[in-house]
Length: 275
Image 1 (cartoon, rainbow, N blue to C red):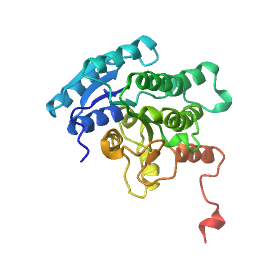
Image 2 (tube, one colour):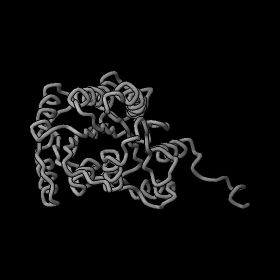
Image 3 (cartoon, helix red, strand yellow):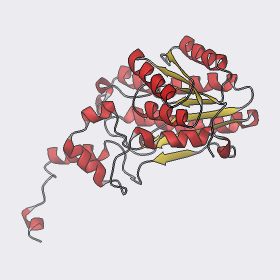
């Protein structure tokens, strides 16, 4: 089951983090991989790892906010024999764009929404136009797309838009044999997030997860394999949350912790303590 031999898949943002885990899982399932990303070093490392797992793979340096780069990525996949699966994983919010909504600038809003929503759509559109024999498009969303996202409100709004577009694309492109699904991870520890995760924040996040651990990039990749495989041929328009069972969005507990501390709500009253 879930054999991707003979299928060609594009993974954007495939050099690091969740994207690297997706590349690893797709390679293990036998897919031919076209791996896209902005940083050449991690990109080449991901491709070498895929080849070591027995997959055919090539790196295509790509900035998904440039239409010409998206077109080149499509051509690279077609050169490998076709385009069967496109995984829109590229997306993030830079530290300088994080902050409360009341202080957010137009530049901060546009930077995050353009990358995570606008160019996710146009990449999906380019992929769909090239999928003349049908295929699978997988959008990586976030739990923030359906829950409050304090300090990254525009990111959550963009991911909500991705989930809405996922459903609409599934309806409009279904007659073309194109399936469109989304995956919404919770807190996944990557190279970048590990550096930002303080011990206290990690503790608060783990306490909110019924499975009592945070996610890893390898928790997301296998679901991509399923959505790319023939076994999911009657699944489209779905958004699947991969959160360890936690209903609490990224940053929510941390935001409340610090805000309540600022408001002097962080300690119980002496009366409450004596009960």
